[in-house]
Each structure stands twice: as C-alpha cells, then as structure tokens.
Image (tube, rainbow, N blue to C red):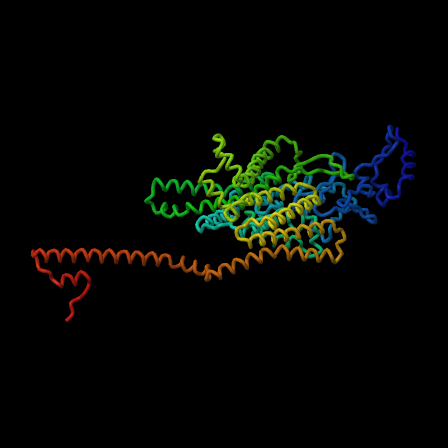
Length: 592
C-alpha cells in the first residue's frame, strides 16, 4: 500500500521547478516499490514544465503553457511525449511568432496542434473526417471534400494536372524546343531545387513571419515562379482542390508518379503514330506527324530533365522514415515520413508503397551512371574488343539521344551531363537527414560543383561555364542564409530580417536574368516572336500563294504544249497556223 504521507513528504522535497499553479491539481503520483521514486503521468508533465525537448518543445515558466515550434509535431505516443519533424506544410501553424502556444489544460497537445491544419494523427499525417489532401499542391493541405461529386473532382484533377502537361509537351514536340541546351541546364536545376529542397521556409522551420505577416504568401509567390519547372504547371494558381476523402498523402504521392510518367506516355503515343504513318503515308495526319521525328528526341530529353527531379522527390518522400524523439533526443521509433500513422516496417506500406519506390530508385541511380559511363573512352575500347560486351555501348539511335544531353559539352567532358542528374539525387538524399545536417551536406555538394565547373570548364561555349558557376554560387548563398535563419532563435534581431530580405532577392535574381536573356536573344534575331507570329498568321496565305503559283505554272506548260502542237501541224503542212488560236491560248485578245 502506498502511503499518502509518503507521497506528500516526497512532494515537499521536490525541486521547485516541478511545483506550479496546476501541479497539485493534475499530478498523479505513485511510489515505486523497487526504486523508491515517483513517476509522473502525462498530465503531470504537461503542467509542471518538467518536460522540454531542446528547441522544439518549450514551456512558459510563468503560465506553464506549452510552446511548440512551428513545423514540429509533439504528442502522446504509448504514454510518453515524443516530438518529430513534420513534412513541409503539415505543421504550419500560421503563428505570428516562431512558436505555437498551447494552453496548459490541454491533455492531447498533438491533436490540438494538428487541428489548426485540419489534420490528425502522428506527425499530423492524416486528414480529419470529411477532409482530403489537395492534389494541386505538394504540401497536400487538407481541405473539405464532403458534398462534392467524385466525377466533378476527377474532372478538376484532369483539367488542372494533365491538360497543362499535355499542352506543354505538345509545344515542345511541335516547335522542337531544346531544354537541354547549355544556357538552361543550371537554371532548370536551380528552379527545381528552389521549389523542392531549397525552399525559403525550410519546411516551416525558418521564421518568415518576422518579415511578413503572411509567410505562406512569400513562399507561394516563389512556388508560382519556379514550380512549373517541377511539373506543377498551374497548381499554385488555382484554389486548393481535393480528389477524395479516402485518399492519404501516400496515395497522392503515387498519383504524382503517374503525373511524372504522363509526358513519357504522350511521347510513346506520338512514336506509335509515326510508326502508323509508315503504313498509311498518304493521309493528311501522317504527313503532318512525320515532321515530329526529330523533335521526339528533344521531347524525351525534356521529359528526363523535367521529370527526373520529380521522380527523385517522390521516391525520397516514400522511402524516408521520420524518427520520434524523447526529451533526450533519442529515437524511440520510426514512422513513415508522409504518413506517421504507419510504422516504417508496416506490411501494407512495404508492399503498396515502398517496393514500387525502390524499383523507381534503381532506375534513378542507373540513369546518371549511363550518362557518365558512355562518354568514357576506355569503356568504348573495352566494349569494342570484348564481343559479349558490345551490347553495352549505345547504338546509333541511342547515341543521338545521348547527344541531346551531352552535345553542349566538350568531347572529352561529355560525362558532365550525368553530374546534373547526380546533383538532383544528392540534394534530395540530403533532404532525408536532420535539418542542420541537410543544409551542411547541400553546402558541401554545391561547393564541389562550383570547383568542378570553375576548374574543368566543360562547355564548348566557355561563357556558359561562368553562368553555371554564378548560379551555383547563388544557390550556395541561399543555402547559407536559410541555414542561418534556422539556427537563429532571436526573431527580434535586425540581422535576421536583413538575411530574409537578401534571400528573397537572391531567389528572384536568376529568374530576372533568364528573362532578360530571352528578351535579348529574341531582339538580337530581329524580334523572333513577332516574326513567328507573322509566319503563323500568314501560313495559310503562303500556302494559297504557292498553290496559285503551281496552278499558273501548269497552265503555262499546258499552253506551251498546245502551241508546239499547232506549230508542228504547220510544219507538216497539214493545217495552217491561226494566230488567233495562239493568242487565245495565252489569254491575249486581238485588239485593233
């Protein structure tokens, strides 16, 4: 039997930090017979501020309220308060400061925090009833879905996701757009990084609220500018829409796989149409489609360039665990990053999501190796000598495809094309690490790439080496400033505000430069945009003009043949040449 006197005597000897306004009201104590100590329940921890986790979960010493850092989840798991880093946007509490204040009488701080974003569960991974994840944003915010027709939702999904992708790649095929040319290599890489792993808010850990009252607005502006290069064409321009309340964030990630594969399916359809034209070459559709043979190579290269980062991002999200930490920052258990209700070794997760993700990951690793492998001279010599290895070296058709990626580099440095894809993979692999280690790895990777391009200078056009070094240096500065905003806890310092302003300027700088380059390029070619518009407008007139010229030439030839017939008759003496007949053939009237 536990004596009440024993309990009261122990309370009187407790440290003063454990005694507060609500300590006696909520404390439930028991004396351990084995160790002679007192253990506290969850309610005890919540009200006496005896449980804080580094900089993530704090306690107000005056009001004894919880202070939960923005972007962090905390909750009761198996009778113990644990904390975890939420996926981007899951724990965006939209607070004016850097911490969410939770009243001390709240027994379930996890549900209280997740309720702000209409979420529930561990790491706020699930949507509340009648809510579903949006399909047009990568944050998968939970919005109200009840009462909407599934067919209408499917129509919205098709119009906002697949129709823009179809239009973009149709333009690439029709106009033979070269996205893998030198000037766009580093800019595409930069745009995809800014819209994924190198975001300004650092998944909610950077205090953008000290710069602007609505920090999500700043982030959305940059997402609108750069997310189209990550295959999210108009998702940030339309209202948040959901597909179904039964779908989870993991299901939405699998749908993102299908979206990233859609351009490839479109290219395959055009290839089949071109092959079909070999059977029916006389049809009007086939005569127009055969012009796309050469542009299909550039379209496939554009698919790889635009979809590779997307595939890496989705795969990393599906394969990443999220650790749940105690107050000593020891990992108690691992959950699925984007859906904390699943254990990392859950059979449903392993078969339905993890296995397909590993299959895609193998392809993602092999593709940069292929671009690094084929240009090496020793590989070519080895393959040509060993008969059984000749299939490894690319055939002529594959060599044309590889040239789309490697044609802008020097012949002995064509393997640099693989470095760009490898950069995306390394950046997203660093994303799975703790946040400070993530930005440290990213800084090291960017520095290595700056040295490679500055020293080896692989481009044929030497000015492009300087352009790439400048873009990588800009990424390094942004990475450093974001790192500083994460570790700076004093949000009132002027240096933090200046740092955030500089970040915004650096993020905008490459976009401004690329727009100026496009305008200069068009003006240097005598206003190519207006010329293309005039050509498109006058194309029908040109065709009619050529058709009229063709008919006129045929008429002249027929008249000439008729004249020769008349002259032949005159030479034979069989008939007399009538000048009026010749004049009639050429449309010349006999005027007095």
